[in-house]
Length: 262
Ligand code: ACM
Image 1 (cartoon, helix red, strand yellow):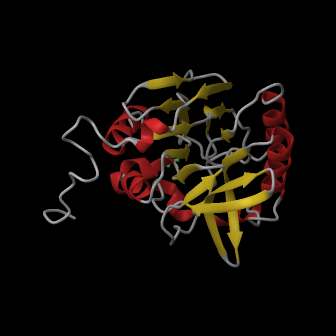
Image 2 (tube, helix red, strand yellow):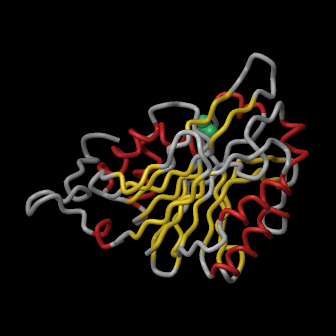
């Protein structure tokens, strides 16, 4: 299976230009699954929920989901990417999953980071696992990494690969995801953006790039730069994630002791 990481540099609020740039970046690229950052088309730092509301879209039905579906048709592939979702009077930091046949599903971020708590409602449903042409793909978003239960619960539900749209500002995530992969024997595709935003004077956020693909043995198959827009395509063998044995004696899920801890 070929997976693509698409590390972009969105300009806050310039949704149409940010979408056009993604289309340009993908010309001539071929993969089965493309992962894009959290909030890849809007930028990250909303000032408050009213501003997030202004950029929020229906999922499915909104402009960004439709754009991703058109790319999925064009590339005969699946796409997972972050956007602001509106559902009634609630606003979510969501990821959408689409394929050549259209909308597949969504995930609404459950662990909101810092000022996200004043811009979004927290998701109320468990992170999901989708069967994408036989690949079991779990989805989590950025700060979910800090809660190992997120990746664990996805792996226990059968995820072989975790797609992880992100806008990273904390430095430890790329290294921590290696541990998530070792703990669960899964692949993780963390896709970040680059650049910075100073939407509120004196509160500059710098995004750390370093989008990466990590395998179930903790090997970094590719890691992008800290500063550039980049697309990387990596061939992964999901059988590696289906085998939970470390050696003939240790199967990491069967060896768990939930009778002794929760
Ligand atoms: C984050 O969760 N975007 C830091």
